[in-house]
Structure formats: C-alpha cells, structure tokens
Image (cartoon, rainbow, N blue to C red; front, side, top):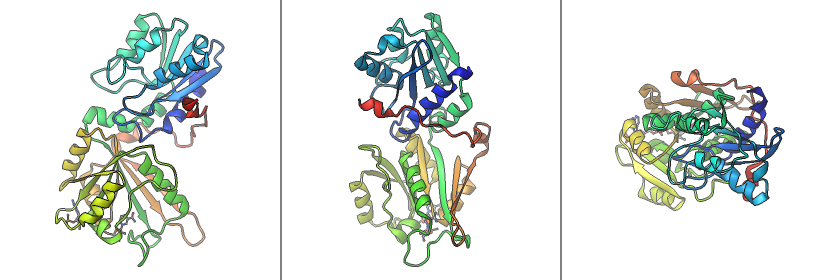
Length: 334
Ligand SMILES: NC(=O)c1ccc[n+]([C@@H]2O[C@H](COP(=O)([O-])OP(=O)(O)OC[C@H]3O[C@@H](n4cnc5c(N)ncnc54)[C@H](OP(=O)(O)O)[C@@H]3O)[C@@H](O)[C@H]2O)c1
C-alpha cells in the first residue's frame, strides 16, 4: 500500500487543478507506473463529456508510445464500470493486457455503482489495491460525494471579518482583506460551480463575482443564486452578470436554491453572504464548510479559519499533509 502513496499524491495533485471544471463529474487524477514502479505519465479528468482520467492517461500514453510500458494505474477514484457520456474506464483498462494492477483511493460513492469497477477488474484477473490514501481521497471528493448521495451541492460559506469583528467594509471600500486573502477567495470561486449572494451585498457593492487574480477554467459558466425576496436587485446588475458568464436564478429560501443547484449538477456552491444572510445560513445548519478570513492587526497577516459541519469532521485528513507537486497535467496538452 505504502509504495503507491507518492503516486497517489501526484494523482491528487493532478486532479486538484481541475476542481471546479468537471461538474457534475468529480475531479479525478491518474498516474501510470511501469513494471519498476517508475512514473511514466499522469493526467486528470478535465471536463464532463471528455475522457476520464484513466482513459486520458491511456490516450496520452498511446500518443507518446508508452502504452506497452504501463503495468500499474494509480487513480484517486475507483474506475467506473458504466457507460455514461464516455465508455466505462474498466473496458479501456482491460483492453491492454500489460496493465496488471489498478490502485485506487476512494470507493465510488455513487450508491448505484458501488463496487462495480473494482469487482469487474478483479474478476478479469487484475490485481486491485484499494484504499491508498483513502482519507485524503475521500476528503478531496467531499463535494461530489455529497451531491451524488444527497443531490444537493456542498456549501462553502465564506465571510471576511475586520479586526473590529465587522463584516462591513469601511466607507468607500469594497474589501479590507490582504492581497493573499483576495487570491484565496478567488481560488474558492474557481473551485465552485455556483456563487450565491443576497440583495444587501449586491445593493451595497454591486460586486463582480468573476474569478480574477488567476486564470479561470476555460469557458466556465457558473450558476448564480440570488436571495432577494423584495426584488431590490437591479436588473442592470443581473444583465451584467449574465454577460460575464453567470446563469442567475432567484431563490426565496435556502432549500429552494440548494434543490435548484442540485438538479443542475452543481457540486459546490460558494456563499458570499453579508451579515444578515450569513446569520440565516448559520441558523439553517445547511452549510458544510465555513471559511472565515480574519483581517490581521496592523502589520500582521490575515488568518484563515476553516470549520467543517459535523459530518465532515470525521473525513478530514491531517491538514499538515501537503500534496506535493507531481507531474503537471500540462502533460495533457502534449
Ligand atoms: N465581509 C464579508 O465577507 C462580506 C460579504 C458580503 C457582504 N459584505 C458586506 O455586507 C454589507 C451588506 O450586509 P447585508 O447583511 O445587508 O447583506 P446580505 O446578508 O448579503 O443581504 C441581506 C439581504 O438578504 C435578503 N435575504 C434573502 N433571504 C434571506 C434570509 N433567509 N435571511 C436573511 N436575509 C435574506 C434580505 O433581503 P430580502 O428580505 O429582500 O430578501 C436581506 O436584506 C455590505 O456592506 C457588504 O459589503 C461583507
């Protein structure tokens, strides 16, 4: 088991780059090893409707003339065994007799396909090693797992607080956090398939909810839930958001918004609430992850506190384990 951990970390790292790009599919990474356990190449699933990570690795290996050298595939998620928008990964793997082993981290959390991929590979004579870095892989898959089992998205509730404890920026400002915190907040947007705001924030700031400070996933369109029971949000602001690639939808209740997003294949929603709407979320108990950015005192850095709702706590890996940089999925573009 342990000998596959570093390849699994590389696979997680490859997948990480596509969080927010693959809904309703999960981000998945795969690394191919040769008979000596040496890394040959790696890839990740990039977008729904395109090749899954395993198929992508095989496709790339074929182009690079390395297909016959693959003995082991290390995948963050159990390979699928069903026909979706793309053929089953098990079929793609079984076509190549030199592939003798599949190592994976998380079991497929989809209740309707559990065990399918591993059983099929095993019954076809492959060695299957399961549960390598399982806690990390399960944690990485938390949004997909929630959506696939509950049909509502994973909710990240973000809030920034000044040293005074206020969430409201000083007059004339839209923000008060550091550059590093802004970068972090935009990364959260990038990883989300939807943003949720309420009227108070729109009326005060007319925010642009796009990903800035870093390139967004190409052609990404995000759902935008608007909580605005008195319909005070100007239509001009809504039109502007549409022109920026957002798909707006009003929701009068949290439950209504969650159900809408779930039906639309949203794995993760980022709630960017002001104090009133934040309170409603906290009282609802329907959030999964609370991200609090605390402004640092004069001359000090901001701090970020992440809290998980109770049922996520058990699945948290130790946070000091950094996923090291593996082979870049730029390989995908070769
Ligand atoms: N620091 C931060 O992280 C942060 C983030 C966002 C905003 N802000 C700041 O917050 C300030 C605005 O504060 P705010 O509290 O008015 O903004 P808000 O919480 O974004 O919006 C409040 C509005 O949400 C609507 N709403 C819809 N459903 C609700 C529900 N279930 N419970 C409560 N409200 C609901 C209400 O209007 P209806 O009754 O018409 O529905 C309410 O007036 C601005 O200055 C902005 O800059 C700070």
